[in-house]
Image (cartoon, rainbow, N blue to C red; front, side, top):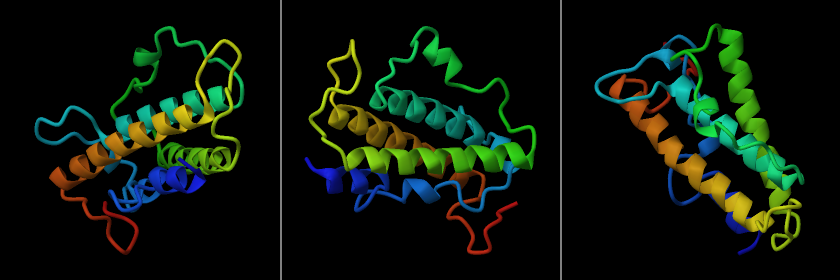
Length: 158
């Protein structure tokens, strides 16, 4: 595996919608809606993706985050963001995390990244790619059942 493998994976190249754009055109109020029997709102999925993306980025930076109660902490307390600003900040945070992961893909992929962990940079990046890919599919599905997929060219599906 090389940097290109992870760069393509971080964006779903040749596999699915670009993970960076899966939230495009989603209004903040709509992001908190749940439709049908689907268990999560788009906001919940974004929050969860951010949590684990940055958990892995911390490891890539040499820090071992406390994993106690991580499953519970990785889901937000509410189904939707409190404001448009909170929503937009979370999307920017996600995209910044992707950029940080891209930078990590340019480093030595075989390097052990955190003291106390046997994980290599490649293994951590693989976790980010797989986790984001899985949940990007859920985001697309959640948006589809609420009639907000594909994203509109105008940039706002509310």
